[in-house]
Length: 390
Image: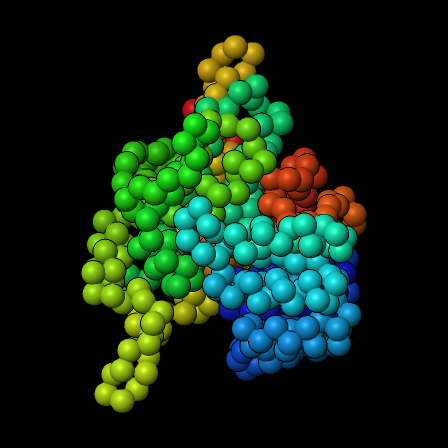
């Protein structure tokens, strides 16, 4: 398989490092707006032929079409902010190859609308786009499909529940994933789906509950946050309700509320002493780079899917999860835990596409595929999953 990787930030780097160890990868083009960053990743990989570097503008569809055709790629992978996915998606269509991303653009129930609206065109052309194939969304959605297939006769609720016991030395506040994604998810209205109501907004950080995370993380308060699974899961998993709750902590929620009040979550440029700058870019510039904080991090991160319902007439509740330890992540790949956890998700999906196990046409989520071969591959990637009966 030949892959055009758009973006070589912390997660893009993880994708490249993990894929490099798999025999199905023929070539991966490291494309970034900052070619120096892509060259840093290439240096770690040590193979400039297999991992060529190109400069790319993810808003320039023609630029990406040119690169896709130049390298005759089989897949275009978006590893940049989801706000530019539409451009990358359109480029893959014109190249005539597969497409994959790790998150949906737009807000609320409209997340991914531009891409879903073009599903018929992709199907007619015999092409496949897989949306939201990271850790969550992605692996969390596959857990939901696995639960539907094997663990339940009826599902009441699919609830994604994420938590961590992690610290970043020297930084009282340091998001461990994309600053842009963190700010958007935590300042937009949260989203819930119910079979009888459809999608509806709720207040961010609402409906707190204590969730008992495994792997020694322990009980943490989780709250409603906008997230992609609430849009994706109901399309392919039969259930009555879908929610997403995150254990953020008081400091994190306080900072996010302050950013929103001050308008620092805005992408609209403002004039500051003659310089035009987007407030959110200022916030991002002031915070540590997720690709550089790995050596300062300690602890574990856990992402998973809580499912409640009925099996053989008996009520059942389970939590399917994946937990990554930062110490092991740094030892094995030199990548911090959250980035590695997110990056492995799409690479396993690439392997299933490369060997023909996953096939399809149109615009689909991870839930549209058989979850069994995916879970079977996870241990091979030193990416084990667990399940707890609640």
